[in-house]
Image (cartoon, rainbow, N blue to C red; front, top):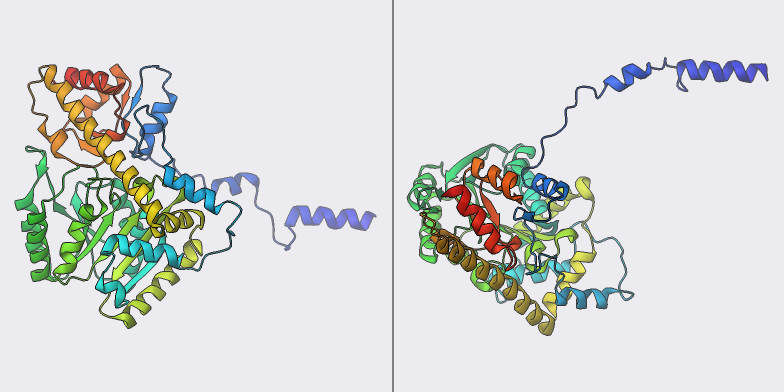
Length: 426
């Protein structure tokens, strides 16, 4: 017994491996240099909103759809898909590349039902963790196989785009996009930057409903952009987070991609079902890359799967099942098309209502851009200081760049919102 106590004491002093144990203070100092991360500029808005006890508070910062009562929405088509899943389908691991069925339906949505590229098996595609995951997979693919390349990102863009390519260690450049004075597209600056970029550059493009500005090129402008890309041999990578949600018509919202395909480009595309199906928490998305031929597509897909393997092994199954069931059933797909149009129409209606309320208040400013822009967000033109006043005086929460999430605007709060905006901008 005494021998046992002496052995136990030695282990406590030196550790089971015979090495001296570090003092508790030394162990704690291993992470003593770690500082708290800065709050995410978007998610931090919701945290502040939830902490505010005011009954008048309004959240127009969150990038998620709300009904006219300000409540989250689960689409009827999603409810029906989940009813079919419950008790009938298993929850086994998906392959590294994800659900083949979901990928097939996603490609038809992005590239067209009768796409020659799908028929010729020229598209390398994998299921991804929504649009963010699709962008990150592509960024890592770009770094691994084109290590000397860089990515051109529009000014401004969704803030997480910079984080994604930064963490993938891909050098970033920016190109002109938004024109603050007109609150529209800086088309001349955009075209100049495309022309001046080195041949064969990678460009990140928003397929529709540009976030955060809501400013999209016209069809004719997209054709000019595509033509210039062809001359310069640039590679377009489309982030398509809002197909169907922007105009209410998925075909119309995919027009930019279709123009580039018609002009013979190889492209990359990130798709997300967060907004257009309300599958925010399911992280359902797809990454696709159009290749020269089937053999190249097989090789590229195998490498995308290899990148995904140490990240998360394989993607989640539930959202993939929901998407697959909705898009493959003609009747259920029609229900979805009606519902996504209903969401888009409500947001378009709130744009009109906000502009009308501001104009009725006698605002000396032009608010045409509120209805000219499209999609979930309105780039209001308000300064960070004006946004701060909205929060401190009216309990209205949005990102400090003046981006208003139109999904958070309802018939019940639009007059209050307009009055507050008028007060801080007049």
